Image (cartoon, rainbow, N blue to C red; front, side, top):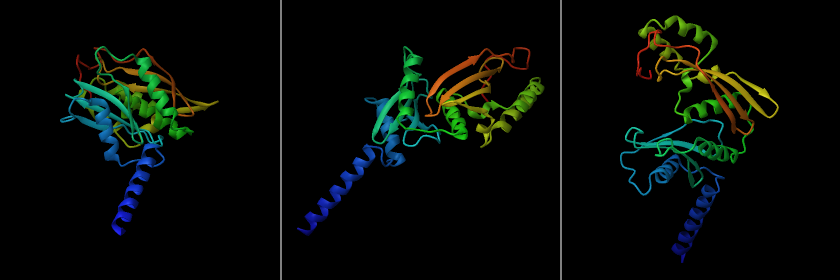
Length: 239
């Protein structure tokens, strides 16, 4: 009877922990979330050889974001959101035919909204960096005003451009995102150095992020810098 009581108690404890995980009142271990993301993105295919990486997004409370790839993201490329024991494929950039952008944005917005955020200025910067990463961009390539000047002075030298890119890869890169608070959200314009595109142009991106972290709008303005005469060559690799 004693062992039966202990077993029953252990079972109830496990059920209690499972209930807390399922309702996201307590976050499950990272390893559990990763397995759920792999299962959601690849089932019924095998996850053997798949690459999974968590997308850093500090303001999120319980939602964990992962990018899952196979074949170097040439075969499978899925953004998965995991909250508690529930996983959802939020975006599928690698799908053929491509998943409509509006559908991806809608799913991501709904997932973020369920986290019930109340951002301050610093957290809004982190959210914009998170959205950059979701779109396959590198927050470290956001330029500040002095970085823009330095870039134009280095376009005649591949070595100098590589050195500049390395100098931008710092832990405080999000501080170069100048978010301005207004009404019930934040707006920002970022200068993004697109080193993966011919000419390595600087893209001006306008952001409108609600206080709950939802991306309300994103507008990419045509680049005004970077061309074939600026020291770049076709198919220039990302630094």
